[in-house]
Image 1 (tube, protein in one colour):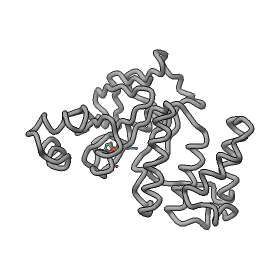
Image 2 (tube, helix red, strand yellow):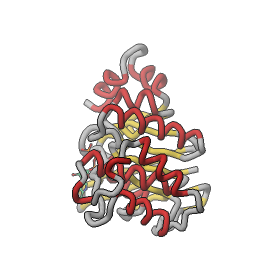
Image 3 (cartoon, protein in one colour):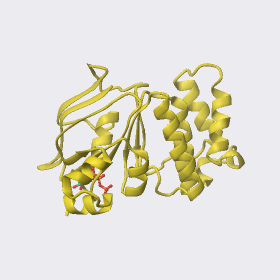
Length: 234
Ligand code: ATP
C-alpha cells in the first residue's frame, strides 16, 4: 500500500534521512526504531506531507502521493498540540465536519472517548487538558478520521498503563481493518509485541529490517530485541 523509495531530507548539509526505502502493506504494522536523532520523526513528517522531502518518492497504491495528503495519510505527532479553545468533543466534531465523515461518526467518536478514558473530560477545553489527555484527544480525533495510512510518533509516551493497553488494542483493531500503520518508538517491548516488521534506523539510514525473529538472527539468535538494537546502533 505505502511505498517509500530512496527518501532523502536534508537540513542544510545534514542528511537527516539519507536514502530510506521501505514498504508498508495493507493491514501491517511497521515499527521505526533508532537512537535519538536517527531520523524517525523527519521520516514521518515527510510521509504525512508536513515536511517536503529533498528527494525520493512516496507512493500510495502505486501512485505518487500529492503534497496535499488529504484523507490518505494521518499523523499523531510526538508533541500533542491541541486547539486551546476547542473542547475534546469539538476536536472530534472538527475532524468529522472537515472530512465530511459519514453519519454514524458520533457513535464511533463516543466509543473512542470511552475506550481512551476521555468521557469525563469530553466538554473540557484543550488548554485545560493534561499532556496525556491532549495526546489521547489527538489519538481519538485521528483514529476517527480513519485514514488508510496511520503514522504514530512515539504514541505510548505520556500515556498511563491503561491508556497504553487500550491504544495497543485499538492499533491492532485498525490493522485488522486493513490500515497500514507506521509507529516510531523507543519502547522495544511494545514494538516487539505490536509490530509485524521493524526497521532500525541510524543516521538517516535503515541499518537493519525484518521481523523480530529475523532481526535477532541477524546478530546472534536468542538475544533480546534490546541486545540486537544496541548491537546494531552502538
Ligand atoms: P528522537 O528519537 O530523538 O525523537 P528522531 O529519530 O526522531 O530522534 P529526528 O527528529 O528525525 O530524529 O532528527 C533527525 C536529525 O535531523 C537530527 O540530527 C536533528 O537534529 C535533525 N533535525 C530535525 N529537524 C530539524 C530541523 N527542523 N532543523 C534542523 N535539523 C533538524
